[in-house]
Image (tube, rainbow, N blue to C red; front, side):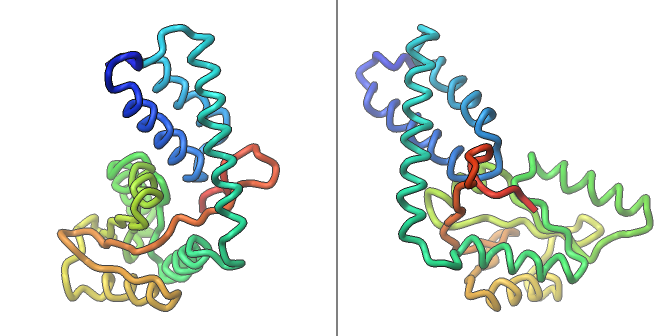
Length: 202
């Protein structure tokens, strides 16, 4: 669908949202964000120069909005509390993969750990698109497996420990259809030097 179509306004809104979630996620270098946003824009704006200008505007607006929003956040944000919970979870021999590519990344890590004789109690992971959903809807979907790669089920000690660790940091969660729905606002502060859109991942 070309950006000059009758749905131009809707397409521009989608591009703005895409730029926002890329910038606010905090897991990508700014150059990577610009490249991804440009690729999305150039699908709609065929002129490279115009596409680059629009990309620059979208990324700049998203960064400005993040800076503005961060001014109103508490000293310890929901994202900070989430990272503290993840630290407790990792201390209990549960691997945490943040913004990984897909479930194969988790599976590969478990296979590597097993080959080394270091099978963990479990592994919790989420993808970059899960982060985008959290930015838009204040809910992060967290996958949790046993060290054997089997999914957790209701009543598992592993599941109860992870949910209790989240609750210890004032983060509510619900287990539903094999995933933990974590209620958390993605209040991740921008990097001071601007080289990355936010702090590096764990």
